[in-house]
Image 1 (cartoon, rainbow, N blue to C red):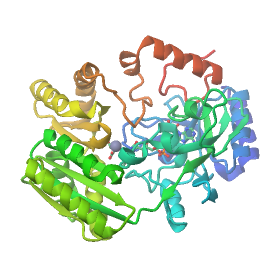
Image 2 (image 1 turned 90 degrees about the horizontal axis):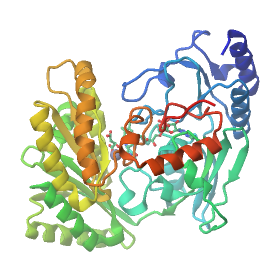
Image 3 (image 1 turned 45 degrees about the vertical axis):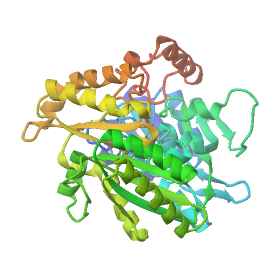
Length: 481
Ligand code: FAD
Ligand code: MLT
Ligand code: ZN
């Protein structure tokens, strides 16, 4: 863009959203919070950060950017794990932050839905539902800052997927500003609607590459009468899979969380957050946190949990366990699990493999891949944990102690990914279970997705965003027209 057309665009954007809500480096604004990804992996450079306050303003911003051929990077809470919501280093991309679109529009108890602006923080949504006696079950450790638009953009998973599904399964309708600046109102809230292609599902998980989600209608559920949490010590990952089977059998739909944590992952929580008292980690190679949500009573839930744990101990898959006595103990147990990514960040730069494999094959996958990594990358520290109930592991790697971390990443990340993803392919798994592709894995996607699937994805991108202005450089390599 020429200097004249840039200043013309800035003037237009200021007219649309107000001068305080267009931030640029030239005006002395500190853009670090919008330019740096959560993991501190990469800092881009934005042409501007624009903060509209309504769907209409978003549509006007998109039209102005399209006319000026300026690319747009939609951003919610900027908590994504794959460098998807920050601009590249060209200084030509506009970050469109949705955080001022933060209203709860309507909670409909009869339809069991809530309709919200896309910039609504996940925790706000959860709290609004709870106040009205409902549960919004999406639950992530980043819930205090991630937004529902970002959750939909990534099709986020989290810790309740085993019962309620990913964000996709929770969504009944979307409002979207298209790449042309039109507003599509798909906020119908219908549970059945077979009138052709389901457009909503195209936008969910598209990482801002097809359009901008400005509103969403989400399913809500009755608050369970009781929610109990247990923390169990296990001798092996095989035992964790066995325990999962028993939990399904004993708790059926009551099983709302099943998270596995390896010993080294828990040792990092113990090291960086010593005030959290992590049970069993010293003597046990694996631990599991599991949750039973029950619609009868707390006594019923406890009795179910007791029977499950007795059966598990008898089968030898659990060696020890605690069941939270009250809500604050339950929160503390969950907090241990949720602190693992934070402890990893404290420990330093790391490599994340957010993979999924059929649950039954996870122990074999881990044994095989551990052996390969230990042999080829001596000293690399494996941080294994995740949503075992969904077959989703965070098979992460921390640099060896005492080495230059940036150098470790520069030299070892690519060959290590190669090893891990080759095994994932052999097990017919996915190289991104819940975090998406962003720019971090964009080069990997073509190696792991079939040419037919990639071709279809390119056709969709081309049809919806022919000017290639929606988050280019993320998810899929595309060319400018
Ligand atoms: P951003 O990071 O701002 O954006 C993510 C992507 O969505 C980008 O591609 C962006 O362009 C696009 N986007 C954002 N808003 C919109 C919009 N309105 N319209 C269209 N596209 C949009 N993720 C999980 O899945 N499961 C977990 O358990 C989990 N745990 C986490 C724990 C921690 C401590 C942290 C820091 C992150 C965790 N994450 C997890 C990752 C992250 O929180 C999720 O990906 C979340 O959905 C991102 O939401 P956000 O609002 O921060 O989106
Ligand atoms: C989590 O489940 O805690 C996040 O998705 C994990 C991560 O940081 O890898
Ligand atoms: Zn996760």
